Image 1 (cartoon, rainbow, N blue to C red):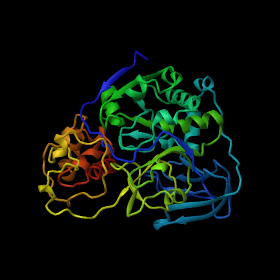
Image 2 (cartoon, helix red, strand yellow):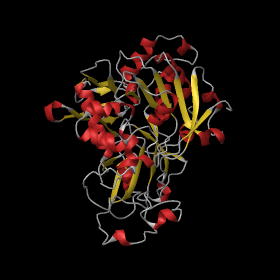
Image 3 (cartoon, rainbow, N blue to C red):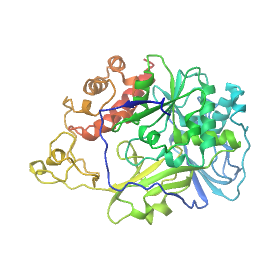
Image 4 (cartoon, rainbow, N blue to C red):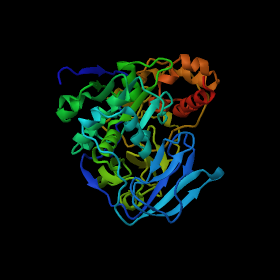
Length: 461
């Protein structure tokens, strides 16, 4: 693939945590009870289509979106509905299903050649009827695509530079045909280009099958550099920058495998690849796993946690969410990270030379000595929230053409027109994860950006 253009991203920082997962894939036992959450999908107002005692198959509709009835969520397991739990205002919280069989609802099957002749409407209908359209995010706002939208272009992210994410070169093994079909499918959903964005290292080392690098109508691009060079916003800004009014779709390569399997087999894929890592997990358990959607994580994690108080995170440490052992594998889950919990405060810690302290601003001696190959970090912020001060530190790790200090101040002041002019619609909260990590004011920059995007979407600016 000598014709593949490589983009070198210079700004950023690779957070090298201890506890990196191996590339080995192991299948986890699932148990017989599965839980499907009702609050995973942004903007969804659920209408439940089943009741307690109903028998469902893999692919049976569980609930749909009142605001967009084409979008439905289906069962990842076949069995009996044990409970349907509703919360405030009768919003769906979870559905519990006990597995007792292995039966499927049938959907249309396609080959790579037949999908080229298929109608866009038929392909979209199958994506919406199975809920897999939710694996594709519509930008701006990273929401479930609208039925009526035709994206300007579609970006497939085959790399993730955040700590402890699924390695695409591992997940693609045995799934080459499904992924290739998925790429062909995306080409039917847009009038523009499909971009496949991959790690330059994987391309140079030939870790990826040649078949997925030569799909007709797909532009393959390589990216090299520190995190967040693997973020979709970075890829969009380099390949085809967004303009006001543009609609762009984005999907993770590991999720496109599930989409490809649906169209290849005519059945909803119930398994996915995740990775588990972190200092809080026993070394033997740090690896990639094949798991089933809706299965509990407790049986596996409880027996593989190290001693002490720990924090379990769904996702990476920079932009993931805190969970507990009662968590079940969610629709968007792709990794779990466990790190030590810490609430201790170090007396006059700022006076120490800091040979073993991570610093992005050269505040400690470790940054002058070249740092370490991996860091044993915990949840301690080493300080409390204080006044927001413009320091310029954020620009050191922000590869997008955005003035972070000014943008954050605009959002805090509810000056959303200015925020739009500063480029907030070209971003996603994950792009500001490193800004949150190094923030001397201990502000949650990601949350601030998310609130700004929510307000802009609600007001329709």
